[in-house]
Every structure is written in structure tokens, then in C-alpha cells.
Image: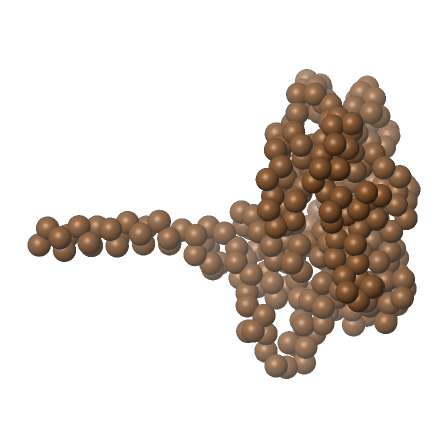
Length: 306
């Protein structure tokens, strides 16, 4: 009898531990739906095409794109890993559930179409898609399908980009160069130009700077965003960098030359401008260099006092 009770206790304990992390609408974290469940219908075909566009954007919309030539050759999944499904890989878990929504960067309520076109214009240094195009409808269909089980307004753990505690010092580009040469050149090259897959069209490992990389208006050009992404995901497949290494290598990468685009309408309410946006005007008296590399703590404290 005692043995039976012990076995029941062990089983009950395992259930208690496992249940909170199961998938579903109201569970602890998001697990993407299985692509095998996409229906063999016209709607399903649109979802599959959307996934293909996210995974191999360059094939369809890149410099030699089958559909149009409106982007720099990077793929959406170079930033939204595994076609937007990877835990802490800047995934699309919360996207459908949180658009349309107000965004301080534009000072407006933005649609999902606006969000996608912002990525094309900024991260892929390109031009927008027609909102009524098949490609736009397909990407939206795929993103909506991915988030179909997420409650409206919810952001499951593991969605978005990891937030790191601020360094007490400025991020160091010289230390970052050493991290890059030790950990990153195998995939991204000594010149940061990335590496193509076997097709020679689509990037397996994206360019981190240069004319084919993201421009200065991209969200990932903000140091907090790139450092958090690096910490959670790099080196690819075995993320082990320390937080300090992540900050420093992100600073090094974002210090390199890349396309410059100025979006004068960004952050119309200056008080909402993030501390790591390094283009003026600023709602404080800190320098451009401190806004770019930190330390960010003093900026935050100064704004709180105001």
C-alpha cells in the first residue's frame, strides 16, 4: 500500500510540474501550431505561401526576386528565426493578438500591414508591398495562423526579444570586435557580409553590416534590441555568450557602416523615445554617443526625475 501511495505521489508531482508548460491558449508558453495541420485548401495554400515568403524572402522579393525587386536580399527569418516560430527568436507568437495597436514610434495605431512594410523598408532596406497584393495577404495569413491560439492582447513568455539589464558602463566596441572575431566570423564572415545558402540567392547567415544589411532605421539597430537578440540566440544553435559579451558585440556590429535612412516622423512625442535611439532630437541633454552605446541607466534616472 505504501508503495502504491508513493507511486501515485510521484505521478501526481510529475503532472503538476508538466501541466503549466503545455501548449494552448491559456498555458504558460507558446508552442507554434504544426504545419502538417494547415488545410489542403485555398486558404491553406495562402498560409504556406506566406511561410515561404518569410523563410525565403529574397527568392521572391530580393534583388533577383521572382515577384518583385524590393529588398536587400535578407530574409524575414534572418531576424524572426525559424520562420517566426523560435522561442525567444523574435517570433510571431504575439503578433496577430496585438495588432492593430498603438506604436509610439509612429504615434499612430498601426495595422499588421504597416508592421510588415516597416520591416521591408527598414530591416530589409527596401520598399513596401501593396497592402492588397497576394504576398501581403499571404504573410498576414501565415502570421494569423501562427497566433490563432493566442488570446487577444496576450504576449506569451518567449515572444519578442529578450530584455537584458543595462550595463553600468558603455558597451565597448573594441571588446565587441574581439567577441565577433572569436565567435561570429564562422557564419557572418570577417567582413560581416554573411553567407548564402546553396541556392546562392538566399542568406543562410545574414550580413550584419554593409549595403545588403539592415539600415539605421531598423529596430535591431537599437543596441538594447540587438544585444537581447544576440544573448538569446547567438552563436546560432548554441547561445552561450555572457550578457557583457552580447552588449559589446552588438555595439561593435552596430558601429559598422550600413545604409543610412532617416525617418523624420519617428517618435513624435519625444518623451516616449527609447534611451537607445541615437538620432536626435532627444528629450534630455545626454550625448549621441551615450544614447548609442550607454550607459543607459543615467538617462533613465534623469527622465524619471523630470
